[in-house]
View 1 (cartoon, rainbow, N blue to C red):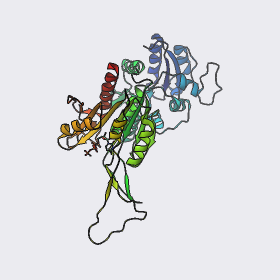
View 2: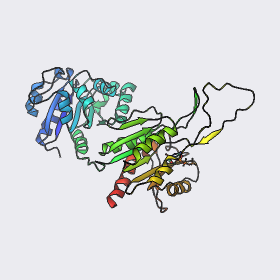
View 3: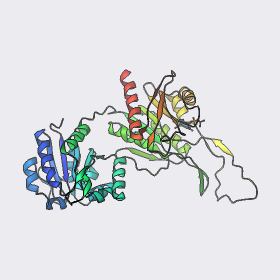
View 4: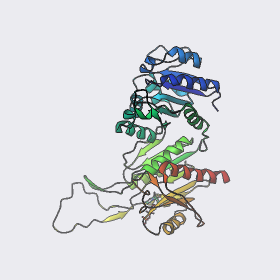
Length: 400
Ligand code: CTP
């Protein structure tokens, strides 16, 4: 699996840096083409000569070095790489990548690459457990980076706990997974909508809903990882799209409608995870609405039903998937929507269940098909739900 693959091994300044030598040696034994990049701090723990000897390639140790004849300037290596493995990864490199800092060769190459990047953290347990590091790790995952968790045990600093570099076999297994990961959506264009829409009442107020966008973002990220050209039309959220996903921010249902229709005809797969507002204020006031005696009655106008329109315009071979977020008679409503909107299937979830719905990181879903059949799933992370949806889509495409 590693044969002839170009793997960049980034080594950062941790006492576990010596283990990178064994990692490089094992990758070479598997016939990978290994290029090592060392940060300045890593060079205090391990010599470049060791990695050069083991990788049989020059080792990059600084950003502004003259480009070498083997073309290891950062963009060259970033483009050539099939996979980046950063092992050991310090709290510092995790923080830098998380925030897009590119102040040495390794961080610059990571920012420039489209290859998967796998981090194997190693550090003192308190540094690892520090909420800042934990937040950075969570954010990196959201951004589409991969992690091999450190192990528990005796740490070089004398303390005990989580922070030891993962076993090399685990790092290699994860790396292999990322390399073999087939790309079943290669060459396919996938359109995903996500988040809520916002319908303005006046310059300071709007009508909206509790959608966090997590489900749609997870779908766009997975579609991208599966090789698709992913377009994400997103209402306002606090999330950052995964690098490589083309994100089009919108605010209102009308704007979402326009953007979706612009791209829909070119897309083989459309998944509508957005919680679109069905109504907008009939009138958007130019000035802030002032309070007055008595009640205020708002008049609302219907927004376009984007998914229903997509169903009407559906092209041959196009796959259309919707969501049905319900609070009662979940499956009945979902079955009605899947037929009305001419979908291939609808992902129903009961917003009243614990661990399902808008803000949660998990979801409990049932796929409902137009013929009345359905598939139930246990509680899963939104990433897993995204994978299950894409698997169902790939299976249906294979049957065609
Ligand atoms: N949807 C849409 N445009 C709308 C409303 C909904 O594209 N104006 C899509 C959603 O993205 C979702 C599906 O339709 O994929 C179902 O949305 P949902 O809010 O559950 O149902 P509605 O069709 O709006 O019906 P109701 O609000 O009456 O339950």
